[in-house]
Length: 222
Length: 222
DNA sequence: AGATGCTCTGCGGTTTTCCGCAAGGCTTTG
DNA sequence: CAAAGCCTTGCGGAAAACCGCAGAGCATCT
Image (cartoon, rainbow over all chains, first blue to last red; front, side):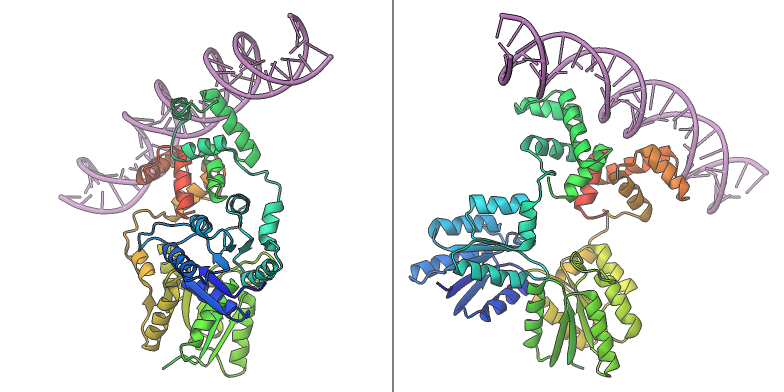
């Protein structure tokens, strides 16, 4: 089976134009696009209604919603909504994000069929992904694969994330303790919070709370 | 004067393809491109040597240098090097970055002619920029203009940047003091460092050093 | 020259963080 | 059931950060 009708959801017009132009060279008859998730969903709905649905959705993850109020604001939500009305559609995510957790979550929770990182060879990888899907295979580009395979040493559980988030928001250890008690999150003694932070500083090779927060912030872990 | 020969330096192929395709629709005869700064400089040199130089350079700012060792790694350096060998060339920067300091610095130190932020309407803005340059005007897209016009309340001087950088790198106040003394940066007493941090926390509405570091990190100020 | 204002600096006391220690609770193991 | 192991918690002392105060140094103004 070869894709004949593909939809591209991507807000940045230079990227959008580039993807659509590339798909034009791949013997795909019909390529349409939207720069907003709401538009994308509408057009995909319309195609179903017209009994000529899209076979493949290529979607970005983050969208600029500054100048328009959109119901759907992220690629993940768009994919979820599209799958509700058309479960059979194939989905490739095309994004700059190469975070292990993000990619994993999309394959697990949204059952996407491919993940390609934008970059120097993004379009070439996208072409490979489409080929793979044509052969009923899933596809992850090399960068995404590398990310998925790396040992997740630097990953935070929910408790650690909450703790660091509060720390980053200016809470003192004693205030974090109070907050945890109020929300029944355990352990919640000041001593335990101290220990956890001490362990995290060890893990991340940080010598101060400030450095720890700097690291997890730049790594996008909180 | 209308541009006949334009060079595009942009590492992400989907963007690159999009820009080149767009320029193709704008009655520009010759458009060439590179995905690495070193290549870009080489090709621009070659064009001068062939007595058929480029009239306009459209360049990104950040380049992926993971899989190749390049001499020139940033757009700013590329522009600087290109201007050395061809001062008359016009330059438009096309980047996602919308930070006031970055944009200002490029107009001041590199004498660029236009700045366009990638985004929903990036390509349209790029077209306007080219038009403006054709009329011997400089151009900044609306997003960049907005960024330039906003009061720079949240901006750091060199001293503050250095201080916060050290803090983010795990230095204690006493260690920062020692470091400043070693590098003859004043004021360098622990008390002065305390005061400066206290003032910064006030400015940024932060109650702990950790929160302060979180804020300046997410705002991209360090 | 003296008065004024400013920043930088050191001191001392309070608050917060850090860290080892030991008691209590819970589960696992023999 | 007791022994062992692990986690949680509180305590106490050391280290670091915080903050007001006052003196020193320097430039400006009268």
